[in-house]
Image 1 (tube, one colour):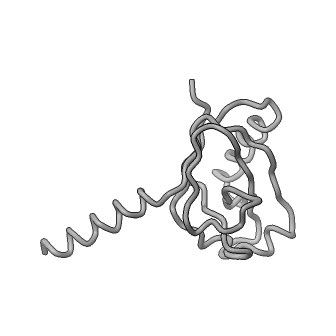
Image 2: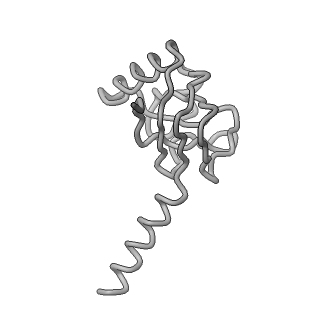
Length: 122
């Protein structure tokens, strides 16, 4: 039982270490539509976006350098995130973003890390 708990803790800890993040960054571009949706796995409606500046650390699996993160926009949560993302882009506001450490949703061109959360820092 101790070994199972140790393995689970190791996997959880290593995933969070490998996740990309961007603190106090600006959203510089947003991509959506059938082109991107057609490349997503598990959904046909995803959005990709890029962030620059601040303190940025990219996930190792993120090989698609034009884009930083991807998320599923077919859900109510995804639609809310898209609204926040659009506000950040339009206003030039700084955001803090954290990825999941997984690039399974968008594997084309080397992969794009999936978004875990985003917020506007104080």
